[in-house]
Image (cartoon, rainbow, N blue to C red; front, top):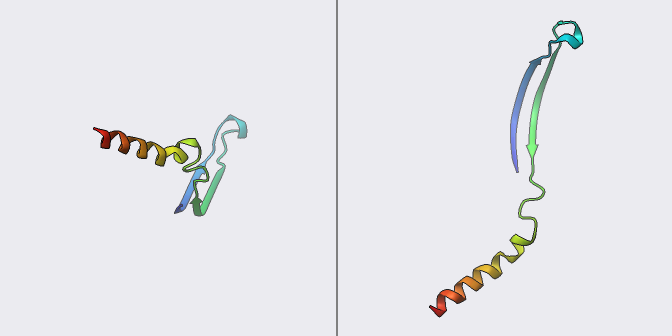
Length: 60
């Protein structure tokens, strides 16, 4: 999990608003949590692959 304190300010100016200044700001805390980290078959098979490699090494 990561977190950060964020402050941004943007001036959105263009043909859609007649070239007038349109400011948008944000200030706050941003929190990110990776929900799918270590997801899938590879993570579950990792112990098996290590054990298989160790067996092959021991046979050598």
